[in-house]
Amino acid sequence: MTTNTGHESTAERLRSAGLKVTAPRLAVLDALSGHGHDDADTVFARVQQELPTTSLQAVYGVLTALSGAGLIRKIEPAGSPALYESRIGDNHHHLVCTSCQRVEDVDCVIGESPCLTPSATNGFEIHSAEVTFWGLCGECRSRTV
Amino acid sequence: MTTNTGHESTAERLRSAGLKVTAPRLAVLDALSGHGHDDADTVFARVQQELPTTSLQAVYGVLTALSGAGLIRKIEPAGSPALYESRIGDNHHHLVCTSCQRVEDVDCVIGESPCLTPSATNGFEIHSAEVTFWGLCGECRSRTV
DNA sequence: CGGTTGTTTTGAATAGTTCAAAACAACTTG
DNA sequence: CAAGTTGTTTTGAACTATTCAAAACAACCG
Image 1 (cartoon, rainbow over the protein chains, first blue to last red):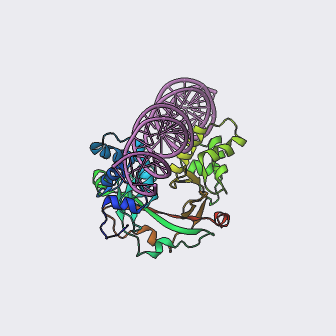
Image 2: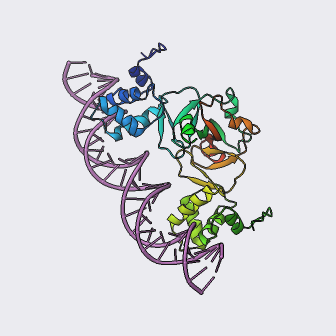
Image 3: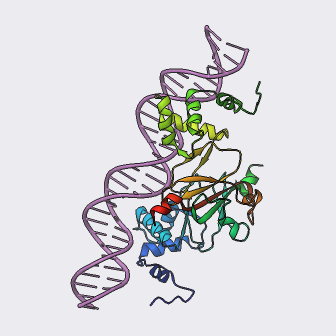
């Protein structure tokens, strides 16, 4: 029975996505929850603390499975390794600092639609739009005065 | 004298950018002109035809120098190697096919401003915005019927 | 034409990620 | 609840795109 109570446990979310519930997967989801945007190495380091036998390749496998299932989202800003985030469902966008590579979330630009409507589709059937804002974060701005 | 006649030769464009005029640079600029979006290997292959002694590393160096000088633009869509294009100056965006990775240009979404104005800047000083539309290109759509 | 500085060659190294086979563990079914 | 099936993780290796570094070289200035 796959009852969706609205506040599924982590294990339940895995099961409803058709994935087996394993310790590495729970640990990765836990490592990503609440945090911002982490690369595979960072997730790996965090997972190892509570599950020291986990391999980096397992983390890659888990991250791939989870983003394939839509439980996490993968972004790949130019110049950074792939980053994973647990905020999903809304199609939010990202600010990336050109100096320190820090990534922060921004809500969709103007409501929802503009982000999905290019001026011409060139025959493409568009599924999603991704917006990346490049600039200097507050911290790097004050450091560069 | 750095007279800008409005139709500078390739060599002149290099010189006005403060770069020395060399055969590999001319060949790379030539290889990129008129073409769409090419990765370093593709540029390398094209350059080799008219300048067989050129090394791949030289091509990387040239591409870095040219995009640093603003003579070409580098884009890095998730899942593809870095691509270079000669269309510059306007801040146009890209359609990327999720099936064949083909990249095409689209003009800026709605006029100009929306692309540069996120809903909240989180303290960032924003320099540019990059929009990537993901979808299926016409060719892959018909193949997937 | 000679000197200086920037560029290219050559050769090697690196980061991030993926692949493959074998060992193993989760869920299913009897 | 035991055994089997299937999906997952481990282990170890490979790979791609890219960068680094030193030496040879060429463009441009005077």
